[in-house]
Length: 197
Image (cartoon, rainbow, N blue to C red; front, side, top):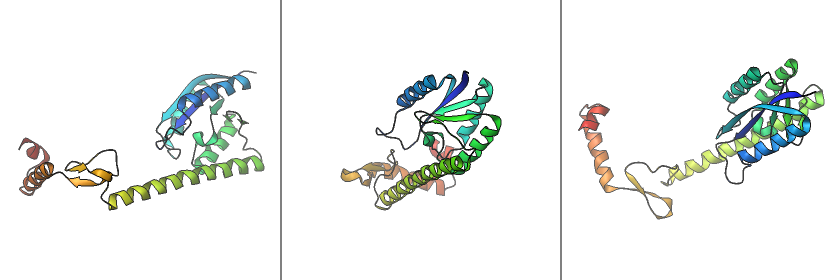
């Protein structure tokens, strides 16, 4: 029996050239769907979205509802979610509604049995742990750059220039402007008033 399905493709905000591309995910999902007898009727794509962001589940639910699809196909379980509690809640709710999550190259994800629930739960916890570790490392690295007076974002703040080695150094001309802004603010001018001045 042919079953309608939607696909969900996601790449996180911390993706780089080593991350599986959106195109590669689409290709793998479409190949799997064809082999599994699933007809893809819609696709939800998130580029630069964290695996812990629950808002995407509403978009997936809307696509399932609008198409009448009974299956969702993803490239890997961690592309679906890196939030173990949300993942298990959704999969159990879908099971009651007859909606099945499929992982390309792996097959349907099963949470009906105790072993299936445990397996998916452990995999979800590992994925969430990895997401949190990456977040902590990023936060710590940016904090160190900030404490060392080095650039910690893609944007160089006004009043500074980027010196050799990545250090931020005060730009004398822009610092004069910042001083004028500060003086005008102390005189009570609004932001618009400062801009006019």
